[in-house]
Length: 273
Ligand SMILES: C[S@@+](CC[C@H](N)C(=O)[O-])C[C@H]1O[C@@H](n2cnc3c(N)ncnc32)[C@H](O)[C@@H]1O
Image (cartoon, rainbow, N blue to C red):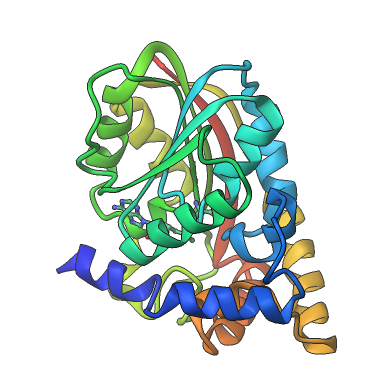
């Protein structure tokens, strides 16, 4: 069953213990944390914090806005948005260990009054219609086979003039990805669409394009830099803590896939039409 395979891919236990141990090794074990201390660990997408910042600037978020982060992972983007824009963020994720870790890290960063998390499936969001000013999703859709269902589910909880901010991996023309990649150990949990098919799915679900940008070149450069850093000196905090030793192969394959045009990156703002 697809959701179980996805849950198994992300957040193998005991995640909290591994994170806690890594924080101690990084010299952060016994002190209060700022959201920025966690950036090497909690931005689970190509481009890291820079890509999150850019997407947020493209969206534009008012203080006090109510934002839903769909597939929030460890909650890094949610904490950044709340701390930077003084907005309220609700993160949902299919992986229970990720949600537990997101709550723990948010508590440690002193942001629990602005950022909350729920364990939920993006296809069955546990919120009333039109509950959010904006929705946000980074590097999640490639795990979701029912793309029409995903976008319809997000649209339902957006207020009428709300926007969905997207930063996603899409299929390129260079052939399928080389597994494992960070979102899939094999083809069973990989559901990349071409940018054209993704845009069509969004429009069919009732979204209108505000902006659409290809971010592949920036992602390729970032992946190469991260690869060089990993080879020079393994960092105490990083996604290897979350995903295990296979993360090195996943990241190297993703870098190669970006170079070979097997995958590309899209940043988009879509308004609820
Ligand atoms: C690559 S991580 C990205 C995490 C986060 N958005 C970020 O950029 O830091 C993909 C996340 O999507 C979540 N996910 C995948 N399918 C999902 C679904 N159907 N509903 C909710 N979350 C899902 C995974 O559990 C994982 O946390």
